[in-house]
Length: 221
Ligand SMILES: N[C@@H](CCC(=O)N[C@@H](CS)C(=O)NCC(=O)O)C(=O)O
Image 1 (cartoon, protein in one colour):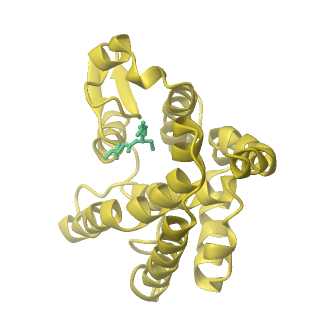
Image 2: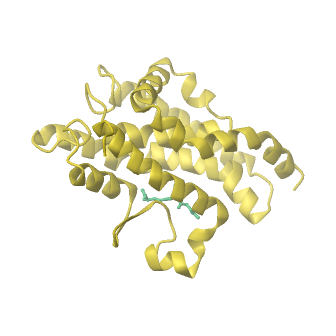
């Protein structure tokens, strides 16, 4: 494939992201057929010619190794640089990931799936939590460096930006845009990942367009 090497990584990830999005929105991931592939009924899942792998972090590391991507994506020779990326990937599960995902779920996914009104107290709680995480991104991860784990982009930045981008889908982007350091980092990462970034986020952009209408419907429940 004659794509630039980082693009190979993102092209592959885009492909999985498409499966993930359509699957999670249609509820297909609860089917018995899907459970045969991923017993956790979650997305993403990688099927590399029959080798099935769940968990986004494991998938990213596998893809970097499989395509022998440049060191910056996930360092292999510099142990401390690798540990730094691992540090973020472990931290994010209970921070960027959890807070952003729960805000998104509470604003849209759960009310829609369960046909129940939005629980605004929970939404407020997770808005506050997202703000705290954004502050930590600024003051810890992005302190003195342009990317989350150093001077170069890594898989940590892909994970980080994708979690925040779901908030763009539900018009909550002010939560990270009001932080100039995080906003500038996101612009930097996006630019580095284009055109694949936009391709990967088609469903997010579509959700954003439809959200005002969906919000109105949810307000009637
Ligand atoms: N730890 C897992 C989390 C996977 C996860 O929570 N996926 C969400 C979407 S991003 C999902 O499948 N949600 C569907 C559901 O909860 O029904 C990973 O990092 O891959």
